[in-house]
Length: 479
Ligand code: GDG
Image (cartoon, rainbow, N blue to C red; front, top):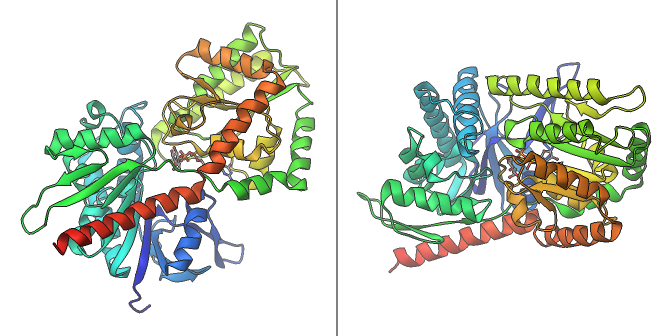
């Protein structure tokens, strides 16, 4: 395999490609869908880039390889790592804690030990493939210790970190038994990016409270420590987005438009199609949405002949107990609503517990008169932005939780507090009854915003800030 070094290295828990094995046992690689890959692909090619991450299967050891001009550096995770670092610490400690303890986080020392060990292996793998003075961009909450570990091994590197999920208020974050280690881990980066202004503020506050460092937004002054010189770290929001052009092109294709019409027909040509698209996750507020809809049917404000709800709930983290319970709860609620209000010809909820190709997602967005995003807490919520990008006809109403990052930008959505069930019900009724002129006005304003801030602007903005941070630190060290 040699000892190639790269000038730009991205690291994320999962690689941007999935390994698929066919019937004959032959394996190949398929890009995993997602904005991150789309945004970084051109930059990776131009900058001679490598991507370090896990292949998605336990105990699989693979040599680095080239995929479409990107060097893929697979990192092996064992079954033990998956149980402790990934399903345990990342998804059953950090995920619920960072989403405002909607579900109770579990704290286990063996999980933490595994998190430290996997983060160290990531840092070692990144250090081994990074050229002198390379730029490294570490992604998300699974790898928060990597920046510091990497800086210790390779002080020549410029290190960025982006947190895709919220960063909680100090009163919540301070529950974490390893809170200081996490903050110190992140402060190894030159630039730490967050989704919202509030997340960056929460992080800076945690730094002041736990370490006593001076902060003046967006700068955090890290004092010298032993042989490590004093440094300036930037912590600020970079709201992530989607590849708007590609998404709109998909929605405009005749096949997708025909499929949207077919979906409407197959659903019995209702007056209103409502849509929810979420990973089956307790942060997404699927239960709250169903409750509001069920009550509207119960009260006779909605009739099952006129309206239907399509709920895509893509399978997620199925080995974590909280997620198994959630699935049972949601499916019981769906069954009740359909049993109580469905007729032979009209179903109240079409519930789909599986993933779909992007074309089908685009067709669903086009077919949906009302899009329901009722997350209780969400870093950004790309589904809201995808819905807006797909609506080249300027029609459709987005009902959007104010607890999503997207609500900072999509101000002409019908903004809701998902905990306020009466408020959600009123917003659903308003969405269904909204005159076309108002729908168009609101949608146009959102489309303008999403177009202005697409995923390329996100990655360029982050990498520009990282390059500036590097220049400034170079100037300081040559003073
Ligand atoms: C995290 C943060 C932040 C879903 N089902 C299918 C499918 N999807 C796609 C959607 C969308 C993506 O998955 C989900 O992104 P979200 O942003 O809505 O939510 P998370 O998965 O929780 O993502 C979030 C994001 O990271 C980025 O920083 O916005 O706040 O939690 O793109 O379309 N795609 C296909 N089939 C499905 O069945 N093809």
